[in-house]
Image (tube, rainbow, N blue to C red; front, side, top):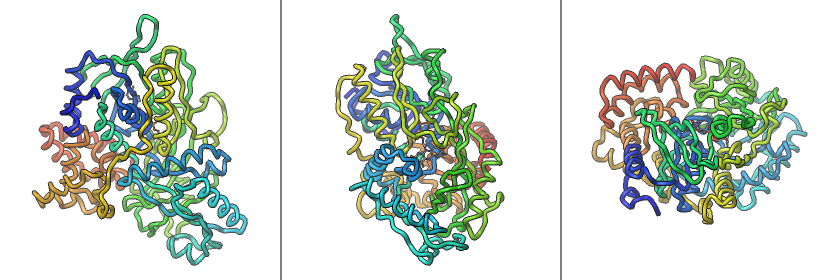
Length: 530
Ligand SMILES: Cc1cc2nc3c(=O)[nH]c(=O)nc-3n(C[C@H](O)[C@H](O)[C@H](O)COP(=O)(O)OP(=O)(O)OC[C@H]3O[C@@H](n4cnc5c(N)ncnc54)[C@H](O)[C@@H]3O)c2cc1C
């Protein structure tokens, strides 16, 4: 394998990677992946684990885009079953099983109950969810069945009982999306790939035949420009895929129809349960979830078509009101605006012609892989749950088209962490098999084991360990995507920003000016989540 042996034993470190790129400036990469969300990281891991020289470039932080703003479900998609998209459901259920097997430190078996108010719904959802189990085959996560009104209320004590006749119980997967992205980056790096955050691709380079042979990129932190030579460039930039396609061909037809999905986060007292609620039909014909996650409740989502895209989408009042009004109908303690701990919005990169009219909720969540005449391979659409399959198909397509020599995909068996039996209940297991290193830090310096703030579980030891191992650049990276403090309680996260900035500055050797700028910028940023 290309990567020098000594690198395998170093932690994933941004400067180490940049130094390596400078030393190896003449190298031609087998694969350069643009985009460090679920799709790009999955593709980079697939490539690196097959032994290809792989470089991934992300313009911001890993999972800064849609991939940290999902509903956090590893699922086949009960809604897609209702839409009759059986092939997608079967594929996603299979991938759900693999994700739970290969990332046991970040995925969970989550129990859901659909509240039932009439016997027709009882019949339809019981039969439908039994079929859902059947489609999962040996990777089923537990049986679905109808439960009585009493059992429903035992599981969901905060559910509005008026007119309730029972519930349909089923199981699906749940996960931590941005930590999953970091785990993919880490595993890709362990396999010899280089993954760089804050590296923006600004242009594609071409040979005299007009074929793409590399990319130009800027290190957003230092401003330094780089040229990378590549046999294959893969565009995995989610809702930004058309921007990259236009770097290749300014006349390229648009391929992405973006839609915004909003969630709100509430205190766990609104649910008081480890069971999630699934509302199968809201007033606008969507599903809405209320899911216990990291000691809070995530409620959402919406689906609104958009004309403009942004890395930092903002939830509109009407979307927040819609979620609140729907939740108020189902919960005994009706949530109000002032109860919201965080509001976040994400953009779905739906693979569909944006000029075609029609609602985005009806567009299939399937992915599409396309190859431009000059050799830009683009992978768009899809779901977090199917990231692995999407990556496998993308690299297989590259092999078929003659960009890469044939090598088999290994990711269906590739563990992102090996969890030792007995540690599964430890919260620190989210750091995978390396969590003992955090334990050692705490053992050596017991004060580092005290949580930074009683509203969050995160300790100083974790922040220090993350600085050394997970490439955070800003305090936003730390509070939004390495820990999930922003999403758990946006206001409280800005109150610990000072301490986070101090710990990061100490680790990286930054001055007080850096800390002040970071705190100011975080406080501005957090307003969009409050
Ligand atoms: C509200 C919502 C809820 C969802 N819930 C679920 C769920 O519960 N389960 C599920 O399976 N799926 C879910 N999804 C779908 C899933 O989140 C997405 O399919 C997935 O995250 C898309 O990943 P991506 O990598 O394609 O895009 P992104 O995560 O957006 O990544 C694209 C990246 O490309 C980078 N980029 C863009 N331009 C450049 C450039 N010039 N140079 C370098 N980098 C660049 C961006 O910065 C960005 O980080 C949900 C989606 C939404 C919107």
